[in-house]
Length: 271
Image 1 (cartoon, rainbow, N blue to C red):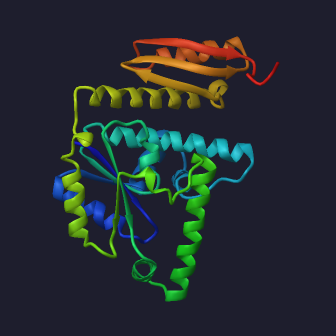
Image 2: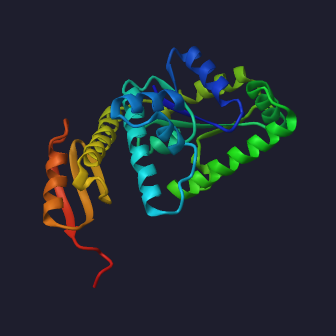
Image 3: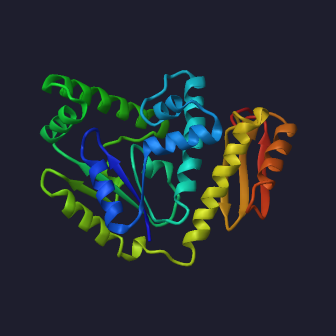
């Protein structure tokens, strides 16, 4: 079994493929909207704020970027919780990025030509052709800026995906068959390490959530890794008090066996 992420370009048919695929496989079908609702309820963050974090690029001010990164950590935590049994199809912007590091992840990109997208926008939004063209251009621009600002990538980079399927040339039914067949490849089959690797990603996510919830550690910039429940934390922080707080929080997360402290006090660029 694999977790499948479907990147659904603006009015590009990805939602229809995801829903048909989930029905075919008997998997749960999870949307960006569902995750935003769940994260809002769980963490007490306004749904619109979370929703915007996976749709719109923040401004260039550091505070705005930091706020978006924090919201993405909330969204990732909720998404991971929905994917525990691996029988999940997620459709929405950034699924393959939010689940980076999760094993056996099948990353799919659904594309379609402009005429297909214009027609979909006109039908779904009940707008005219010129309005549809303008809306698609605006949303595409926002998505590209979001990817560059928060992830440092180009959204059009095909290497981000394992499969790219064009609905101009194949039907939704054929796309479902191709994706289902890809799941039988060795690269996407579960093995003895799959669930432990997923649990490690979940542990890292939970550490970040608790760091965010604790005001003194909310803005720390550290690297957190987990391997078989063994956590290592590295980076530069401002005081020994912060070091102690970070390590104590990590040690309190369920599933953590031990924590290796590789934190340093001060900034690495100072000399």
